[in-house]
Image (cartoon, rainbow, N blue to C red):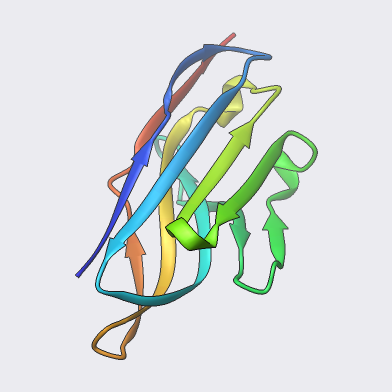
Length: 120
């Protein structure tokens, strides 16, 4: 119905940068919220950053000033620029979209996840 494809994860040293991308495709009429969540081993999935169609942006306190979320509405794509990475940022990062489908259903969709590993 709706697919989210993520890219850009990898291994980086502390202090380094990575840029994640997520493209949504399929039976989409519109997307309101798009964002990134992460899950570290043994921990619950948590919000990293999220942006709404009206431009509202929310960040987790732990990433404010280091991560920047942006969005290309025409391409249904969301990006996460991660700078000054820390070992505690190590996690699987998941893309999320709150989409209105062509069946007129508003549903939450998730990507498959991309691993981000920050070495000390």
